[in-house]
Length: 115
Ligand code: 5GP
Ligand code: ZN
Image 1: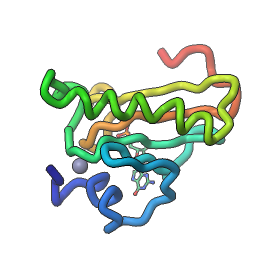
Image 2 (image 1 turned 45 degrees about the vertical axis):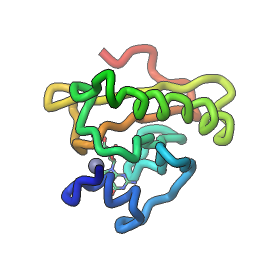
Image 3 (image 1 turned 30 degrees about the horizontal axis):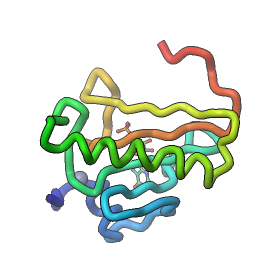
Image 4 (image 1 turned 120 degrees about the horizontal axis):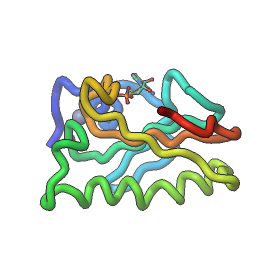
């Protein structure tokens, strides 16, 4: 369930290096190369799912596994006061890598609004 042309599949396999902060059998998380806050982690399922629009009853456990990893990563990185989780979907959502991912952003008081 790997896409040979997918950047994040290559990061998961180690073909492209990254700074890994969490990994289990279903989830991989690494530091964003262009951080938008003191803590900016990209959390991805190891299964290649292109975007939120492709989540179904058959594969939603991959997304759930990412959310189960969030509190573990947040605790490990000391995000005691909270954080923001963002998923960009498709062109209008600003998604640039078509392997579903969740941005975990924090380490400072974030802006109150994003729209
Ligand atoms: P999107 O815009 O699709 O929601 O988020 C993609 C994210 O992946 C961006 O925040 C971008 O900085 C990050 N990114 C793109 N290429 C790489 C890379 O090669 N390594 C890492 N660590 N992050 C990347
Ligand atoms: Zn992929």
